[in-house]
Image 1 (cartoon, one colour):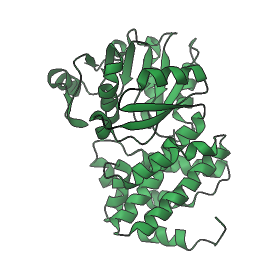
Image 2 (cartoon, one colour):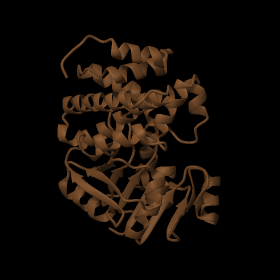
Image 3 (cartoon, rainbow, N blue to C red):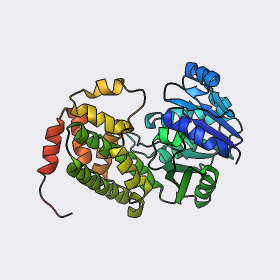
Length: 333
């Protein structure tokens, strides 16, 4: 496959354009903001979301969906989770039968509680198109990908041939993909780790040490795994790159937006103030609501997600949330 369309030019979409450009003769990057698109065409730099990195010369930047999608063979969507449905609906008139779709968005749709691949498939099923959808996820900070640091992640699809195709098309010297059939496990891991990372930021912001951080990561992994298995995923997926790998990165890395939200909450800032001051979306803020709803739907115990939900939505203090977690009824591991 030679023609790649990347829909979404935040830090992750821009980094993917940079790292994947050597793999494709033609890459088109759709940018929501026309003024940013114009600057990116002139300077070859995304000065808002990923400053300091040059786009390769053959990456075409456009604010127009029809132009971005023209003759595309792979459509790689990298928009925030709450925009996936509406953007795919806007894209429908320009999609064609040979296209395959790859989601790089980590999140869940509030209300429907659908994973991103399910949202995409649901929109595409309203047409004659037979949706062929894969997802990519794993421990990836955009800035490190863009500077060609070695990175490993997972491509998952129930269509084994599609997963193998994307694996071959995207993998390169610094960007290695492992194939999986467990779309559920990969997407649940990529979503719930953001919720746990808010808690990790709280611990860091309160000046607590390594003991509580190790406990949070370990028990957070247990919650992610319980939910994924209840939904039909495989436990080994959560022990891999899209589960444990991404969880460790997001909970400990200073580039994590979700961790930063937790740090600022621990410092006493209000959630609305934190979110409004951020250029990019911290997916965990929205995902926390869906995580708690899914836990109730599948009767899964997720106390960390529950306390993050209480903290984000009902003003429970970080210290009180920790107290509630520590004073729960004793149980076996």
